[in-house]
Image 1: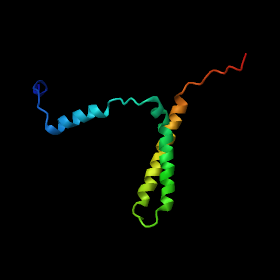
Image 2 (image 1 turned 120 degrees about the vertical axis):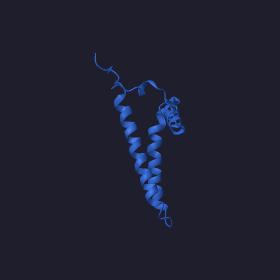
Image 3 (image 1 turned 90 degrees about the vertical axis):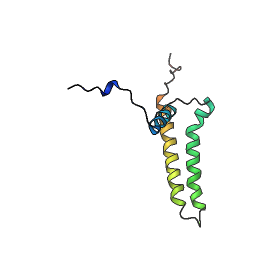
Image 4 (image 1 turned 90 degrees about the horizontal axis):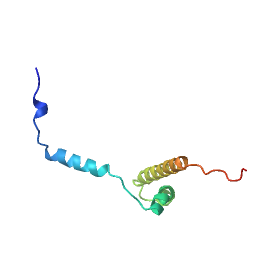
Length: 99
């Protein structure tokens, strides 16, 4: 018994077409200017620290406090990961002090 379903072209539904288009969009490379690329981990760290200190000044909006804490933890964690990966992937410069 051989199946002939593999030979028949099937029409994609609207949802499948949207998913395929967005998949191509999401997997494209993004090119950032060098200055912005180098400043990205510092931006994450600073925005996380600012959000952490902003929780000290929240007095009446208690419902927003967990959001600030979660955002600050995520930013600090992401900034540290990006910083650490960039430092470990850079080639070490040769030591010129040795003869």
